[in-house]
Image (cartoon, rainbow, N blue to C red; front, side, top):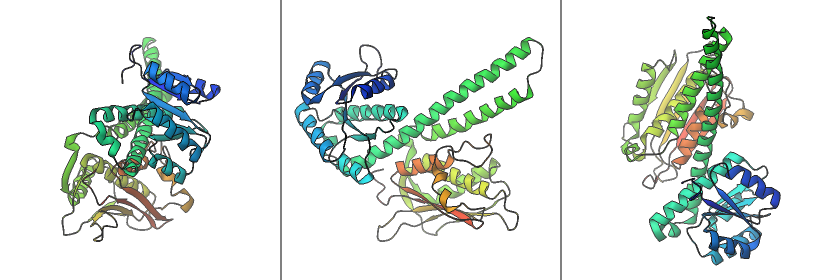
Length: 385
C-alpha cells in the first residue's frame, strides 16, 4: 500500500474510546496510516462516505452477540462488501472467535494487552485482502466463511512472526553498528579492537545470518515453489545437503521410507526448511548423550486410507528428551537451550508456522532420557493449498 500523503490508507476507528483511539493512532500513524475516529454507526457512515475509508476498526466490549449485532449493522449500512472490518475486543475464547469469524467478520484482535506489532500486521494483511477482493470481484464474497477463517488465521500467524523476526534484525543491526564503530575508533588510534567487542561483532553477525535465513523461509510463495512431487524424495535430498554442510555431526541418521510413492502438491521449498529445522533440532538433542548410540530416524508415512489424515513426516531421536511441562514451550519464539551464537530459538517456531500455513499440524511427543518424536501431518486435500 502506498504511504504518501495523498494515498495513505485510511483506517476508520468506530467506537474506540478516546484513550484507545490515541493508542491506535500512535501505532498506525507512523506506519503510514490515517486514523479517523467515529462514534456510532451514523458517524461511521458519514466519515466513510466523506473520506473513503479503506478499513474499519470496530471496538466492542463483547465479541459475541453484541459485537456481531454492531458488525452486521455496520456492514449492512456501509454497503461495501470489500471493505475489511477488524473487530477489537478485550477478550474472546477460541469458540467465540470462531463464531465471530464464521459470521463474516474479517479478523478479531484481543486488545488486553494491545500488541502494537500485531495490530500493524493485521491491518496490513486485511488491506491486502481488500485489494484481492477488489481484483477478484464477487468470488471472494462467496468463499466458505470457515475456509476464510482458517486462511486468515494462517496469514496473520505468518505475518506476525515475520514482523517479529524483522524487528529483531533491526535491533541486531544497531548492535552490529555499535561494534563496528568501536573497531573503527580503535583502528583510527592505531589500537587493536577489544576482544570482547570482536566477540560481540561475530555473535551479531551470526545472529543476523540465522534470522535472515528464517525470514527468507517465511517469504512469499512463488509459482515455482508449489510443485507436485513424490514426498519420499524430500528426505534423502535434505539429509544429503545437511551432511555435506557438516550439520549432522556424529549422529547416525537413518531414513525410513515406504515402497509406494506419496504424491502431493505442496510448497517444496518450505517443506525442505521444515525438515531441516526438525533434523537440526534432533541432532542437537543428541549432543549430551554418552550412554548409547546417537540415532535419528527421518521418514515419511502414507496418508490414512480413510482420509482421516494426510501424509506424515516424522523425525525421531533417542536424545535427552523434553519435560512434559516444557513440551509446548519449545515452539515459542526464542525458546532455546543452546548458546546464542548457535541458535536463535526460532527453528521450531518457523517449522510450525510453515506447516500450519500449508494447512497441516506439527506435533511433538517426548520422554526424558528416552527421546523425542516430531510429526508433521499434512492435509489430505492438497489441491487447495
